[in-house]
Length: 185
Image 1 (cartoon, rainbow, N blue to C red):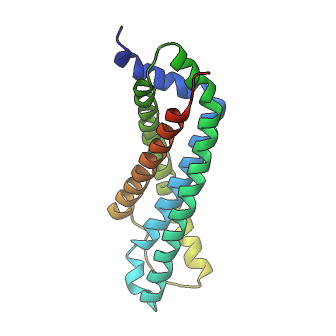
Image 2 (image 1 turned 90 degrees about the vertical axis):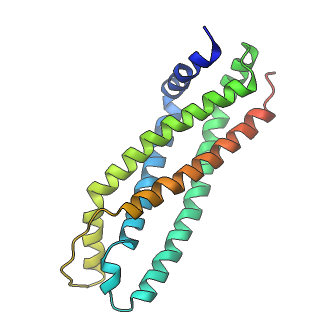
Image 3 (image 1 turned 90 degrees about the horizontal axis):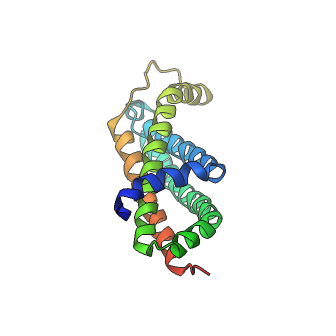
């Protein structure tokens, strides 16, 4: 059997067999995606057009979103480095068993793709379910009595997918760097 045919199976097995490390990581990424989606949904809601002092509110939310993205990136970088630290022995064993670093890189890429799909689906679904509640809470806290509805926005959906795709690509590059530095011994 060719090594390429084994890669998807090894990627799934790597996630499942290292569940004690991956499941909290997946939960953290789902929470990060949920947070980003809700924040972007509020920013792209039609309410922003009818708020008093809408320019200030929009500016503050934009700055907050940038700060949130900055924090989420470093949080996920730290969580990913923790996962890779726990898997160094496994990667070294794969190397000793004859897998080249490029094959290990392909396996890690497939793992990242699987985790990306699962976490984006989970985070955005959780965001869809809870965003209306959080939106109503925000209106209540700000004492704004407007008759508006919270609607799903394609912009927030696309922004969340794009942001996390970039983050996952950067995390993958970091993983490749770690694999490149690793020695089987």
